[in-house]
Length: 325
Image (cartoon, one colour):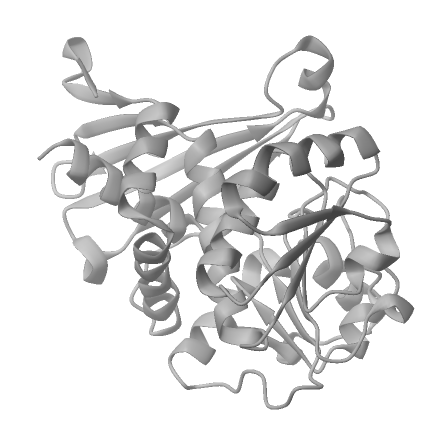
């Protein structure tokens, strides 16, 4: 962690953030993010709606938060962009910074690169949903899409469901799925099978992390007992599951109501009248016992993740305080 003298603030790199969270371990990190979901459902967080700026070829999002019950000393904002065209330029398609501030004086405390922050906190949110909603004896995990986010999703889920012995991966470019298998199978100690889409969806837990703009998973592919994590479609223009999947689901869980109603499957489902806002259950409500989770082995549970600002602030605080001992 380097001091930026002229700003009287520290710079935290992606590598430092990654090392810090890895030293904590996934279980401990997931437990901290879980506190954010609980406090959100208790009305103890200040998290204004995400602000979007669409340039036509990229988008920028600003995500402020303050969690006085978690740690009243800090507040902050993440600025994150997605630029699909960057891939052709050899640049990351997701970029971002986190500005961590002293909550009393509003002095800048740290500037953090936010790519790893986003990857870890998104994985942690899925881990919480999976631990809460999937069958405890789940053996197979289907990962759809093998880009940046995929290994973080898999690691978080493996941390909460050690019963998993097989990961089925599908990517529209097959060699990328094979590279994923080659890289992570020895590290994780589970079998990784490169399969077609239908076989990947035929898993106990299914997580989608693509940038699809048209639905590619139909309701007919969804089997009883599965837990679904819809992660990739975090805006109106993206969608992975057909909205009819929501109708087939026993219950639909969300990370944030305001964001989910403007994102992916939920947005399309509301638009088509397939679901209503009253059908959407905050994940934090289940954690607090205010709402029901899985009730049978046959339930189909669907979790919609859009990424909430409290997840970023918790991550920033955890990393900064550990580096600033």
